[in-house]
Amino acid sequence: MGYDLPHGYRLTDPHIDHDTIARELSEANRLKESVESFRAACRFTKSSNAYANLGVALMRSDLLGGAHRALSEAIAIDPSSSHAHSNMEVLHSVAKQRGVSKQKLAKWGKDANLKLSTEEAHQHDVLTGRVSGRG
Image (cartoon, rainbow, N blue to C red; front, side, top):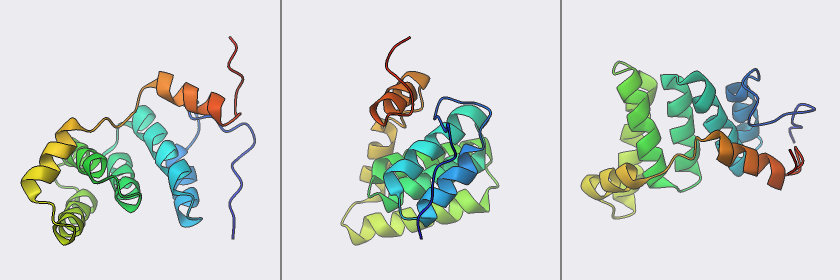
């Protein structure tokens, strides 16, 4: 079953519940869009849960370095987050299955750009036709 974005949905709108929309997109297997919405959730809430959800979405998208970075941010925000810790364990397992050591994964994570800037979000909104490029 598909999922329709709410009318007027923009990644740059701080008043939208991006996390809920991102979870709906993820459940509809629209991973690229869910990643962008989880990024918006991180941008505006700075919550451990938002970063952990972004990490899971990036892992599902096979972006392991970004997943490590997001999950590390989640753990830094809330060191007791079982959600972040358990998904970091899953990430380590996935990386190991692909022949990637924990050290290499950590380096990829350190080098990863989570693309949380409002400028990048605006460019994405323009490219997807959510807003015009003018103004």
